[in-house]
Every structure is written in structure tokens, then in C-alpha cells.
Length: 374
Image (cartoon, rainbow, N blue to C red; front, side):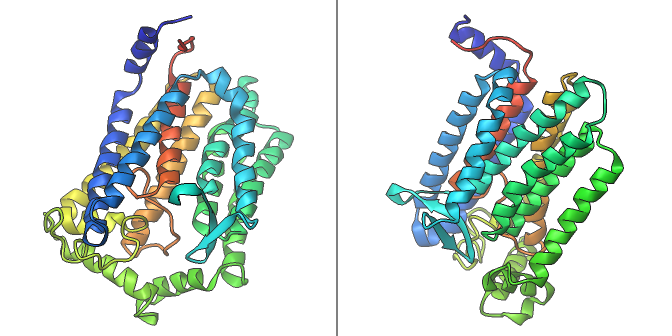
């Protein structure tokens, strides 16, 4: 049994670039959240963001102490916990915010969003199912792919029932990324793509989405259609980013950000705070930082000979990449608003906990095998 010093040495040999990128992103997020909320709430959101960051770091440290064999064993339980949470959200325990029943309120004013835990669960459950084929040096069999599809479909359907189209798309993209890396034949990949397209089409053509979410899609197609509602919000976001110019207006001095003129800027639209106050240079830094983070995780997947490790790393990389693209795209007006937070930067405990758990899982599985517990 190794001492704490052994664990510290193992952690020091982890990907320090990945850890630094996640820490810098989380710290920058704290600064931007404070800028977006200080006019109305003082330092309250900053304190909570830092508290969420502290809990996320603690969670990551706990996960890092597990080796890959333990994580593989725990994968079904993490997945089932996420599914259970998604089921509870649809009961009277769930609460509705902005047209989506996605949260469970806890004592003390806290809340959890089970869809974030579902992302973590899928990142370990799918590799657990598909890694054995690669270990046999074969493509996944039809039975394994169908089982992986069912494992993906359950949380996707539960998330769509909330409804939360953004999280459902992330889960589908995550699953598609794992299938691609697993070596699944192209007809199966095409089937997953068609299923995703069918789900999106159904969301747009049926009463599945709430009126609030439909207004978001309408505002994307025509920002002037709802000038006092979501259309106002998206127009203000674009104004803030355009007003930042090259160098930005300065922290806490952005005209729209510092005045609190953009609703939910600390969550969905924190990127607009970077655009207005840090300018093109600062916004580009955020994009490059998240790109570095995703790239280091994917690199860890390419450096290993263990199929389970490879699939886990690419699952987390796909999750962070797709969610970042969607959030930044909706801030720039290139994609519809779906309510997805920007990984590590947006305010929100569930997102912060899940993102740091994802980093912890990557470090734990990519570390050379060995006992690290005290």
C-alpha cells in the first residue's frame, strides 16, 4: 500500500498542461461571472462560483485516486445514478426553469442538474461496453453496438422529455464519437446520425419543446421576431461581443456586462462577457484555451494501448468539444440558443462538478497502472 507521497508523485506525473488549462478556464470564468453579476448581486455569484470550483476540484481529486480497473467496475453504477437522476427530474421532485424541467432543488437554495451526471456516466459506460471488441482486435459486434445504442437512448429520451435539446445533442455526439473511435462500421455510424437528425426533426415539428424553447429557435431565425423577449437577449449578446473590439472595454467596465443588461449572462452567455470586456483577443484566448483542453484529452487517448482508456478519453473530448462549440456558436448567433453552459467558465454547480469529474476520470485512466491509494 503506497503512502500519500506516492499518490502525490503519481499526480505530478499527470498531464499538467490539461490541469493548468482547466484551472485557468475555471479562474477566468470566476472573473467573468463576477463582471456579469456584480451590478445586481455584488460578490454573491463569485463566492458561489469559487465554492463550486472548490467542490469540483475535491471531486476530481477523489476520482484521480481510483485506477482504471476500479473506474471500469464502477461504470454501470455511475451510469445508473445518472439515469435515476433523470427519472427523478420528471417527478414532482423536479423543478422547471425556462421551460425545461431539468433541476432538482436541494435544501439551502442549491440545485442539481442530473443531465450533467448523465454525461459523466455515458463517458464510462460506453467504453466499458465497446472496449472488449478492441481488446479482441475486432470491430464491435452488432449486439455490442445495439446495447451501446440502448444505453445511449435511455438518457437521451429522458433528457428530451424534460425537454433539453442541447444536452440530448451532446449525449448523441458523445456516443457517436465513441463509436467512431471504437472502429464501428460506417452503416452503424450512419444510423446514429440518422437517429440524431430524426430526434431533432421531431423536436422541431412536434409539441415536444416548450413555448420558451420554441421562442429561442424563432429568435435564432429572426432576432427581431421577439424584441422584448429572447430576441432582445440574443441581440444584446451580439452587441456586447461586437462592442468589445480588438482589446475589449476592460474588466468590470463593459457597457452591457457591467450594467447587468444581458439576462442569464453568467450561465448561457458568459462568452459574451469575455467578448465585450476582453475583446477579440480575450475571446480568442477562451477558444484556444478550451481547444487546448480538448486537444490534451484527445492526445491522452491516442497515446495509450488500452482500448478502455482510449474510448474514455475520446468520450470526454467529444463532450467538451461539442458543448463548447454549441455555447460559443449560440453566443455568436451562429447556432440556436439551447441553454448549454460553457465548460468550466459558466456559472453552475452541476456543470462545474461534471467537468472536473471528467478531467479527473481522464487523469485516472491515462495514468500508468498502479496502486495509488493510501
